[in-house]
Length: 292
View 1 (cartoon, rainbow, N blue to C red):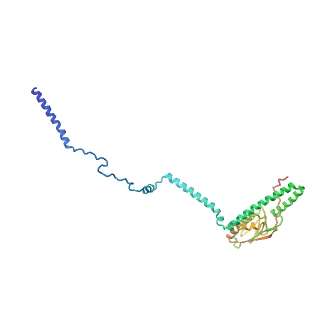
View 2 (cartoon, rainbow, N blue to C red):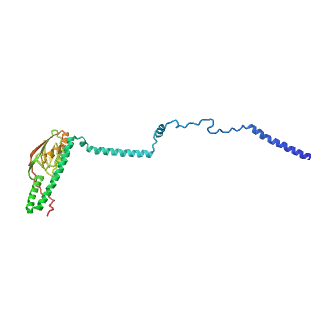
View 3 (cartoon, rainbow, N blue to C red):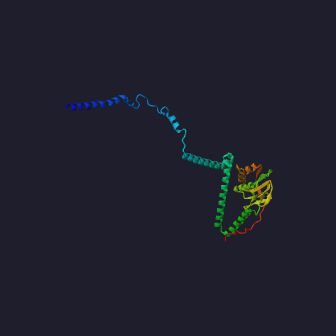
């Protein structure tokens, strides 16, 4: 081997040793890598916030404070409005029955008796009409029987129309109004209640009450069909006394209404009441009989 080749090999070797030294110095200057600790190694796990609470406490914590959304609030308001409306409706309906719920047992029995009496009167009227029909069908002289029934019907209609006098059992009702607080509508309610209880003929202070009778206020007095009457107001009524008087004394009825107006009411039964105030028969202007 020549000297030049030997010198080249020596230089390459020296250059290789010189190139390796900087790397050795850089590795010595860097700190050794420290491996990352494994999860959970050397430290206890952090406790979860809810692990120390009981089941009931977690339930309360989840429900309170409530988290209300806008749709839930709207639905709640609608349900509240619906419930309030139903409550008002129930209260208004219950007011109409408050008088009966607060009535005594004897008052309720009397009301039931009055309803039974009205049913019985309707049944009697039905039987009477059926009897008339049977008599007309079975009579040998149907013409005479028809005339007889026509005369009887005319008498009955005359009593209802006020063109003939009438007498029979009934009641006398007197209303003392020293304060002047009794109004026409209260007297009209009295007439309606008496009719519903089966009154067949009525007169008030000498004025015969018929189907088209009207009442009106006239200062501190009352006008009946244009005739002014003053207190005391005296009703003479023909009908079954056992039906008429209880109808006036029912809870919340005529007597209690008048007494609330500081009026004094007295009712007396009698076996004979005379209704002798008469009305002139009036020919209708337009209505005509449709029978041929």
